[in-house]
Image (cartoon, rainbow, N blue to C red; front, side, top):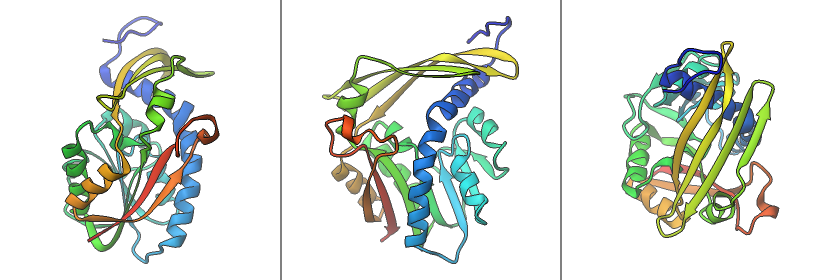
Length: 257
């Protein structure tokens, strides 16, 4: 169990909440500024009179808040209670759940899954299961918008020896990454701290991601009866010129077959 520097202990939920807060400040808000421009363009390019939206792996609620403040009925789903607790400062329509088995019977006009959340699924069958769950909450005219890391970014960014460091008045975050090309698995050791309700909570997190090629993603979509109508190069952190990779992320726009 994590300990706080001011004495006493914190729960696992509070510890993960500290990570969520620090990540939100260090990368989440920065990513969302670029994601918002992408969403602005795509919602204009693919208009709909229906205003229902579902955000998968909603995290701290930035995407839900984006849609909600533009007049959509927007719902967020995430497996992390700590993330949902933070997201409640931005939206009340939140549900705890796994995006491979969504707890909804209704349909949504637009479904999103951002922040390379789908790369956290380490097996191709898990990715296909998530896509099937999305297809089940889509109508014939719904669209699914999501981003995934381009596979060439893993040896370039996850394979470097120096950790990513970000800090502010109330947080400090370090992310040390490694990448094994044979497994196509990237690993991240996340350490640091964040001030939570007057307590400095230590952060110790381990995360894994899998690199998927565009062909593998398209195959998993096909298994779920989803079809890409657009695949866009996406560089939210302006990294493309500094790395030897075709692009940083792939942003998919998909419809039901």
